[in-house]
Amino acid sequence: MEQKPRILTGMRPTGPLHLGHYVGALENWITLQEKYACYFLIADYQALGDYSDDIPRIRQSVIDVTLDWLAVGLNPNDHKFVIQSYIPEHAELAMLLGTLVTLPRLHRNPTLKGEMDQQKASDITVAFYTYPVSQVADILLPKAHLVPVGEDQMPHIELTREVARKFNRTYEDIFPEPKGLVGRIPRLVGIDGQAKMSKSLDNAIYLSDDKETVNQKVRRMFTDPTRLRATDPGHVENNPVFMYHDAFNTDHAQLEDLKTRYRAGRVGDVEVKNILAEHLNNFLDPIREKRHYYEKNPSLVRDALLQGTNHAKILAEETMREVRESMGIKQYV
Ligand code: ATP
Ligand code: MG
Image (tube, rainbow, N blue to C red; front, side):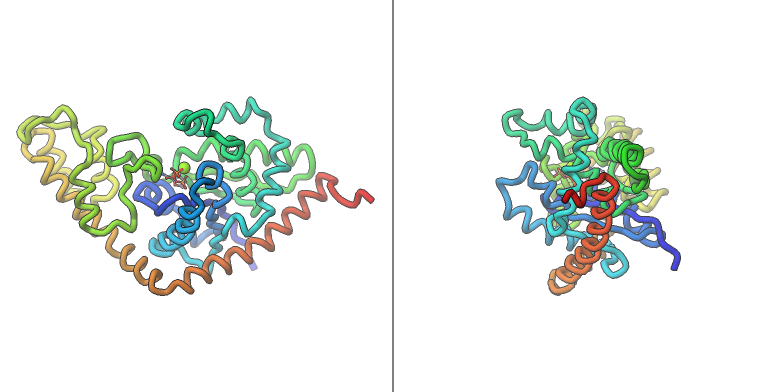
């Protein structure tokens, strides 16, 4: 049987998934399912790095993230949904690979630096500080070839490639050097115009939001701040409302017409937003429907997680045997 190349990618169970996850990552996961054998990781150990004071949230989010995955069309029969903490090999490999990463190398990671700047220095845990190394282990454990992620994750993939090279050179050549792949919209802005839609910043439209919630969120979305009246000429570029139109409006003629009228001061923000909300709701409707189905069938959610995890566990044990062997960590006595 021909072996398909592997994908490892994942999400932290820190809340339900939003539109940014979809256009930055999930959309690629869905289409790549055909050509790759996929391992979709629920990274609960990684979530503990900054959410250890809120275990109930992590527990709830394991289910929420899985429901979202099923709702957008990830297929748990052909692919593996994996719970990180059920496979201690993740932690073991992270510890071993930590010996190949220096502190100055960790400090050069711009994503880690940005996230640390957002936290109070005295609150930053060692687990959070070293999470890029744990992510390296997550990717190398199933020997992934491709890692589809949002743009903010690319520095972690670069680190993974370096660690794989270093391991292969130092010990035995066992790891492929995985490539990263960024989605159609590498970084979707928040509804507040901030650089990234994020669970932690309270600026997200969730895949599970109902119609009225979406309408309300779109109504309060940031738009062109220089425009005071509907008759003022408006800016389309860097305008969050139009960025969302670009991402989710499937009627290109309508969108071009809206942009022309907006630039000329011939359409109000309310109309532009109403049309956007309609497109978002059309996009979300089938996802909501499927999510509802799985909510009513919790045994399917459970099976998806347990089957995928059991499978991934076997592969993880295999890789760890190889790692210990090639490092010479075996048969001391
Ligand atoms: P947190 O704020 O808790 O870190 P998050 O929203 O960043 O949550 P993650 O689980 O860390 O979510 O990221 C999962 C995947 O979704 C990653 O590949 C990440 O790059 C991608 N992603 C998250 N937010 C966006 C966004 N706004 N635009 C594009 N991709 C995104
Ligand atoms: Mg994140």
